[in-house]
Image (cartoon, rainbow, N blue to C red; front, side, top):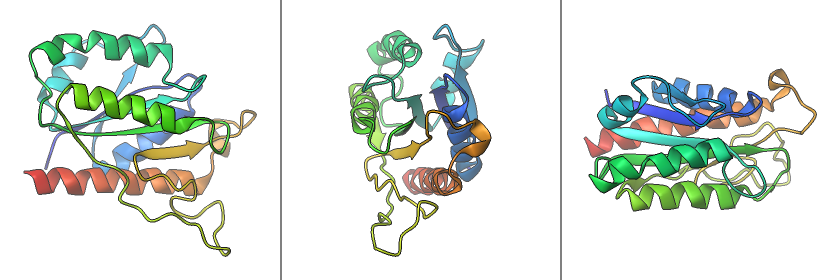
Length: 183
């Protein structure tokens, strides 16, 4: 069993629900970035011990939240020591619109992983793009580079699209599979 850590920021709880689904699919551990952009006590040590790190942030104004950015900037200490080199990396994001510039956020997470010398895993999922596809199908948002989910701006955490949560669980299972292959 590989040690998978899902490090994420969630402003309103939606990204946290996605992180929980990724953790369920991957048998990973959640590591929440708080409202001030800080990790809990022992968080940096958790990341150091991880075999795989999955990054998660809501998409705000076309990029990660400022809290996630603060965490990323603070990761310059492990970067300098190349502490995350050759660890598996992946990422996910949630925003209110179907596109919502989520790809910009995933590119940010990918770039962060590459600066750390990590190995990136995408979704490995085919898109649900036929006429028969419904919003509750796996990977309806059709992302390959990382997990994307959509939550309408007036939807509660309990109203998140079940297909997106199922996609997050499948994404977590993919990370678990890839981490095992790298062992």
